[in-house]
Length: 93
Image (cartoon, rainbow, N blue to C red):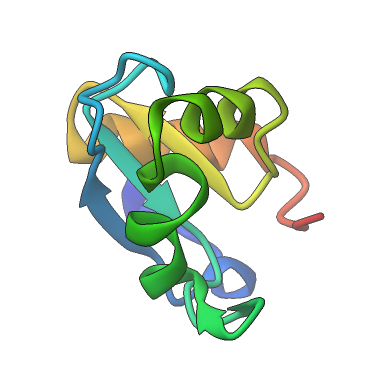
């Protein structure tokens, strides 16, 4: 499925989850539109430092209401598939 990533989601970045799925449900994270700014950083830089990559409480709160531009999976491929399922209309919040 992941070979069909729509252009509207590019660039896509896949990274390991700091907490190995404890809060996200998967060991890998897939970030869509990774060059979009979150505060002063691009999502690709923001994710490992803040939100899902921050302290335990912040990571748990992030995943309780995770935005559509990020998803998790047991493998990199499954993280991509999870993102595609989450944004089936190819739009991000």
